[in-house]
Length: 524
Ligand SMILES: NC(=O)C1=CN([C@@H]2O[C@H](COP(=O)(O)OP(=O)(O)OC[C@H]3O[C@@H](n4cnc5c(N)ncnc54)[C@H](OP(=O)(O)O)[C@@H]3O)[C@@H](O)[C@H]2O)C=CC1
Ligand SMILES: O=C1O[C@H](COP(=O)(O)O)[C@@H](O)[C@H](O)[C@H]1O
Image (cartoon, helix red, strand yellow):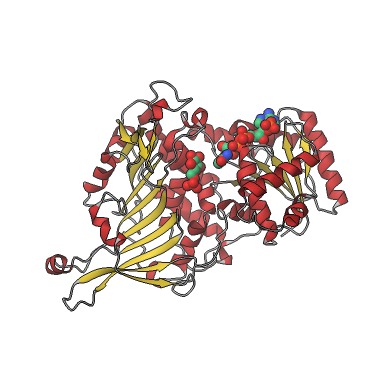
């Protein structure tokens, strides 16, 4: 990895503290940072280098999964960190920053490779990019990269304007838009699963798959983020970005030797093939919900409208479920059901592929109770891949019972999403970042839904906190003859939960999932 200066805007903020420093520290311990690495933190707070380092140390103690490590490692990690006071709107602060960066590059013999990480509110993205350009910070004789956090725009129009402005200072290849779901280890292993297993690759189409279900349920409510969330809702906060990225990563078809460019092109093709919704038809395939008072994990919780900071009479969505169709050769006719919500019964992020029951006859169906074949990719709370097959149960009656092949990352400590993403950004590999074409197409697809919500063309269903959302979400699948798998109140899933036979395999033996193929990765 090339020597790099990591310039962190928002170094005093919450994201830096909870995610960025712990991720950098873990990369440091794993020797995955560039051998020459300089970090400069920026914020308005009047911190010194010493107080900045003390804050970073504290965040590592609090949030790093390696907090038990020898404290001398933490000291060693932060000892070269610098802090500079910078107000985003003040041009003279960028001049001061430029001098500091150049001085450090000289002291540490670093080429001027600069990664600008914007861990600040979205209203600051454009002014920072413009000031980087105007101050000459981005015109040194090395590479420059811009890493930006979500949200990327508020709707299609604002996203286009933002992109246009950023493009004046950075090329598309230099912009790394974070979608932390793309950094999740199971998402990164998803394509390796398909690419390295012809048996799965051969099944990955509408001849064999009945439907796909993508769920991201959370138990938390709006927390202290009402100021942000009440203007955004589940559609903008989760669906337009994370959920559609999961859809792209699931539906993509990649031959074994696919490179980074192919991934990008094929993700874009999926989005282009996504059947658009007309505003007046949104209500037929989109369910909007908002949590009412209830209880989560045995604790009573208030309804969304009673959360501090939420506007009176708010119609904001805290739950959304939708049926999507991809109109292409592979997926035509396969419904993709996607849902995400806050204050649900349990935290669960998973993709379920339900295969068609091609070979069942009415006789075997009745006698054997054969369950559907499922492939379940579990991202949270645990990480695993499970394949449900049917086998004779050995009782001599000839009965068929579901068996499960579980693939767990046994003993392996998987990296956090931010570790994967920061490592990739440092390496110039944008495979697992959101590219502009995808972001624009995702906003274009979501736009009629935003408008239908705005104009109240879609009913807002209240659901009790601690449930699986409004019952209309179940009906969305029931009208096609399906049901959400793994909802505890769904009897048909009990067979899976009370499994009798389970073949536990080590992470590597059954399928080769360990790493994402290098051919995916592109070094700029
Ligand atoms: N926190 C999280 O879990 C997540 C956050 N994000 C995104 O990350 C970004 C940062 O969020 P978060 O850390 O929570 O926000 P915080 O409000 O905690 O931090 C904001 C940071 O921006 C700095 N800042 C604000 N205004 C200025 C200014 N005028 N000049 C210089 N610095 C300024 C603050 O510095 P100071 O206070 O010193 O002025 C602070 O370091 C946002 O885009 C958010 O959407 C995305 C996913 C999760
Ligand atoms: O981006 C966001 O994601 C989190 C959920 O992330 P997860 O990794 O815990 O599944 C969500 O709580 C938050 O509202 C949203 O902004």
